[in-house]
Length: 400
Image (cartoon, rainbow, N blue to C red; front, top):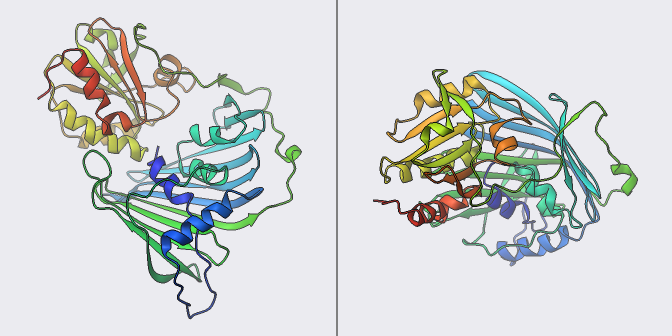
């Protein structure tokens, strides 16, 4: 998904007034005070629209593994939205592109994939928060910023840095640098926020030092309090599009039989979930293009090394391309109790969304030896907080 919580933290922050020109006036206001002041102004806007660009780069491989998101966002209070953006995935010299449309008419939230002729439909909440809940990218953070997410407590102090020029304009810069206390394994994060003379955030660069990837988010052509009306957000998908799921489904519950499925490993051999009956299974849904999944992968691997042979990790690659899956698996270190598999079923009938009611990645299930669901998790907090480990201990698993 991108680390949504961290990105939301950055995007809800505003900026101190920047003075135009080559010389920069110094103020006595601290960076934290300026951010809090501007944040309060942002959440009181009636409308917001801007061009949006995000780029996520794996610093280990550079341009060979990069995701770009390009589009425009338009919001109107209390819960109207219109977004259209392109996601470009560069993997190992190959480029793939997808277009997504998102629309809220105040009653219904639509997420539409024109290439697949499919859409998701959700009941819209009165405050607009559902947009961010159902988009796993930095545009969701822009929604949280506008629709009034509370400014969270900062675990580290924002500081002023030297002004910088970006695209011909001088910006004041706020930096954040934690001390390695975020996350179970101590993730090091460094951020730079570029604050414009309009009291808005125009650019944010986040370096996940230990996660080995960099996220750069840019806003351009920003307009505030545009003269939009609710009818400007009227929307319905084309009649020939197919609905993938009518409402946001909940994860499978304790005691339900885990749906059986057949997928294939990196060599094309079929793998069935039922083959593992009698063992505890940690089912892991992931994608090569999701930084959150790759971050969770390191935590899963560390946990797997501490578990006995009667616990297996079945890592199901979904919503991805076979070539990207095989290239990634070829470089992954082998583990005795982990199997990587690929789901080739189309979106809407796929294992993650159709059978296991997964709406975002990463997602995990713990399945008991009897084939019953013990618990499901969406996101990676279950790994950071030790929840998967706690469920395994509940089942009597001896963890080293």
